[in-house]
Amino acid sequence: MDNLGYMERAELDLLHTYNRYGIVLEKGRDVYLFDTNGKKYLDFAAGIAVCALGYGNEEYKAALKTQVDMLLHTSNLYYNPPIIKAAELIKKASGMDRVFFTNSGAEAIEGAIKAAKKYAYTRDGHAGHEMIAMKGSFHGRTLGALSVTGNKHYQEPFEPLLPGIRFAEFNNLDSVKAQVSEKTCAVIMETIQGEGGIYPATKEFIEGVAELCKERDILLILDEIQCGMGRTGKMFAWQNYNIKPDIMTAAKALGCGVPVGAFLLTERVAQKSLIPGDHGTTYGGNPFAGTAVSAVFEIMERDKITSHVQKIADYLWDRLDELKDKHGCIIAHRGMGLMQGLQLSPAVPVGEISKKALEKGLILITAGTDVLRFVPPLIIEEEHVDRMFAIMDGILLYG
Ligand SMILES: *Cc1c(COP(=O)(O)O)cnc(C)c1O
Image 1 (tube, protein in one colour):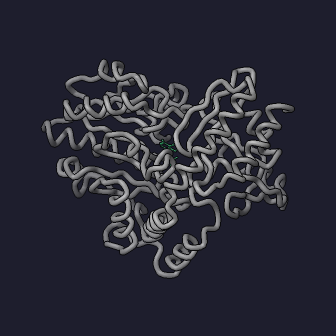
Image 2 (cartoon, protein in one colour):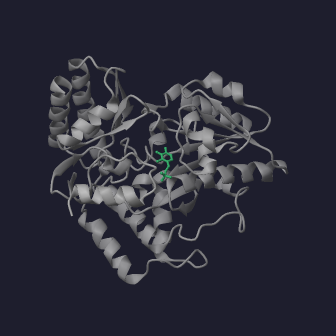
Image 3 (tube, helix red, strand yellow):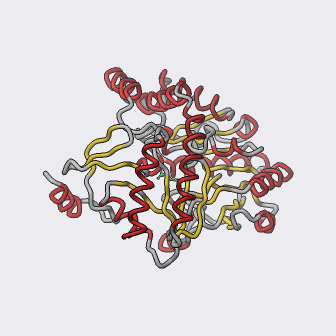
């Protein structure tokens, strides 16, 4: 069946919650995807920052295939070897102490919120705590995650959401201080705002928030779901700053395509937080997911993915700067590592640009209302950046 046939069927059966691009993807190879018409695309989206290893990594595939033959699922009533190894690897990479594996990013955020609330409950002997979240943030679509997502448009139809959430301005320390009360138990933020338009936390801001949190025994929750797993040239984006979160979340590239997320706590927090009976998930951290996580960490470490990202990200930075200098419609260039964005003037709708890119064989996504988002597989090379540049240059010159 060709692209059109599939699209017709999909629109009959799937709940229409996504405005999808008009292609049907069938297979992947390295940093390329192929649709059902056989057309080849250079991928600068990585399934929204998920497919960090690109497509078809042999070692990753072999690990998963072996595990499929052994055991897919056991439930969390028993131990299983893959998840124990995965836990050791994510602890080593993050320096955190305790991990709970989930099935998605939003579920990791739910767990992080509960862990913070339970910590404050144990410490103070009562509930009723507040959290501070950021305007322009994105933490997922479940009701708890939505409650800390600073986007009225996403929230409004589903109100009332969680009470006790106060919003502050990202990268404005005074505005965070202004929201602190006796009841504040946590500050939650992305280290680099992704969906909101690719805004890295400034050093003064995130280090200031971390200090404030320390002084007041407020927990700092960093959402590393998009920016983590090597994307910034460190395994986790917060490692670019002089801070450490009390709680952090991961997902997206954590399984490189196998659905898996995690929230992690320091031992200090874990000692006063979730205990048997407080939290659970049937699938979370099953042997298949655990195998994916371990394979991803092992391959990333062996292939020195973070050093590669540091180099190739500089190259991407230079080439996107070159695009910006050349085309007046690009009004800003922001980001860190292989998480970069070009903000366009309102006269040039980003959705139109990403559609044209697709026609020319380049997969590109947007962020916020006016930002083109560049979150390619971490294995891209200069030649791929050059190809992306040529396509974008052509689109911005001739439409
Ligand atoms: C994608 C994302 C989420 C939600 O993850 P899902 O797996 O879609 O639930 C949460 N936080 C950030 C920063 C994200 O980018």
